[in-house]
Length: 430
Image 1 (cartoon, rainbow, N blue to C red):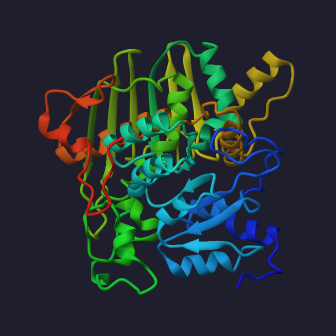
Image 2 (cartoon, rainbow, N blue to C red; image 1 turned 30 degrees about the vertical axis):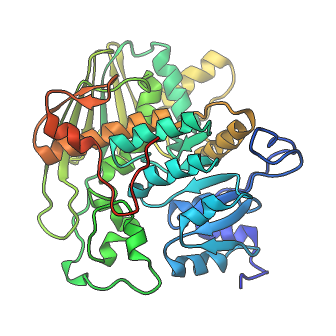
């Protein structure tokens, strides 16, 4: 039983989440939703890591939590201030008529299938980044959101950060001229994973359901929890994790949401040991034609400033640095000073991007407008990450057609922008 004395403050302290948001009465009168004086009831699919952070923002609204790890469910229940239903199969969440919207924070290889199913079930969706594992998944997600008229927000919250907005305005005002190059940097992928740990999955974990649409692998604890990030078939490394944040803010600052690169070239080294297979010393170059632009992703250890990741925008009149890209963005002081002078009020660049991303989603559920980090934008950002890993795996450059969303003159590579799924875990036709 959950502890009745467990306070909201203690839960938020443990989860590092932000304060909850309650919507005003009457906002749910849209078609297919409860009427006035009701609140949005949320279902949470995947409650480890970011799923726990998200849960802290919806404590008064959560109707059910779902996770394939029963130990994790028990742990979360013990921290909640009230009793909440639980399940281990996300389809049971989608079956419930009292659930209005879902927050999907399962591992990355599940995002596409869960989001499409949620849209088919009439739920609005907040899906963690990266939006999808394959490009075909992303296309299906965009189609499902449109067909079923769903509000879908992607968890690349950096666009909601005041530091990002300030840098964007600075760039779009032409202070550093026409942008010709963006250099994104990040610390390298880790090397590791213990090959001696293969064995039967613990009885509290549904391993087959954890794998879902991914290719089957024998259980190893170093595939699970946050370590899934370091497998190409699950998480895809730093470029699909933090890259989904950095490319999101770069795309927003430069107006690239509706387009993509014409050529992608990635090089890297296979990890020298362990079971994790994401590359080290990873370098990616994206060539755009309209606009004429090159974006670089560099994990070779080069840092233009003392920060683990971020982006340098290089223009014809100068350059500007944005540190970070997720919930922790830092604008240069010259950007803040410029905007303070321009607007006549002090611009600090401080704010809570995660809370703002949640609020934007909830407000759009009310108005049926398009969220700032909508699924179309999220899919385009994820496509950049996916093409980089694909170029690395194939050891060749890829020519990409942004409008058709296909690889040109390389049928073998083009077949790899999708995946077959596995067993019952296959993407439905939208």
